[in-house]
Image 1 (spheres, rainbow, N blue to C red):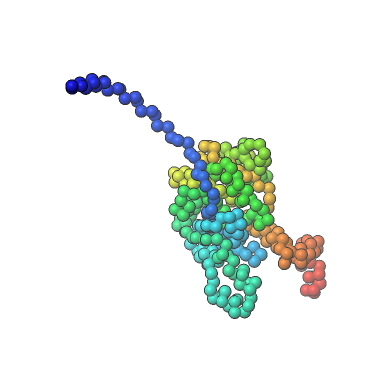
Image 2 (cartoon, helix red, strand yellow):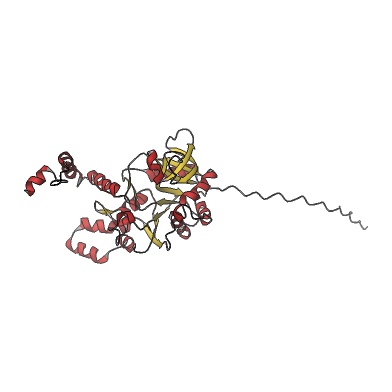
Length: 339
């Protein structure tokens, strides 16, 4: 028997497609293993010393400033470091490479102390270098790292901004990144008259139990007097989600005609994905002459091999400093010896 086919049901009218709503930005998960060290600046505040020597290579006691920065990253577990440099910065690359002839000479003399000191920079981490062809600002320097970093979160440490080696700021920032994801910036409370030198953050509490953590709701690059949203200055330590690259690509030049990292972070902050760690420890701007000198004195005094004798001399120097034209800068004992 032939069974007739059932009558075909009339075609249903298709439902209208839902409107496409962009998904909110989501932070990338995963541990932070890479660091980027922008070091392409001209160092004009230290001319003429920086005419032929990178400002990041100026010695702080007996190590260049940038070595402290790399040691900080390595101590926090970041073992893959990209340095973004510029023309006339070859000395930085050479410092973090092996110096075969020098090492051979020290080994032949049996000078193991200096040999270890010479070898140490090359052994701190897996260090890479790229040049920022055009001086287009910190945001552009970070964007130069995109292919090296890929889709992983990463830290940014400015090459002339030193955190005292006894502090653990970067490790704390990595902990905050693990908890909240997104990006994390380092903040310091500064006097109102100084806030115009920095990027400034508008903040709100992040939650209970973490007094040093805030949520960043907005950012202003070097605000005019009276226009700062707070006294929290952004200093040279960041832990960034790779989402920052997409924002930097479309960020137009801002203050000074440069691509500002602050402008890109402002967009991420508006999406609620930026937190700040409020830092109250020791930090040095080695791009500033007066702070550079203070850095050398502080770190020299902290050295067990130099500190005790240097501190004794420093106390005598300060006590005897009379500022007269014949003996300014000399202790009474030194002036007697010179006579």
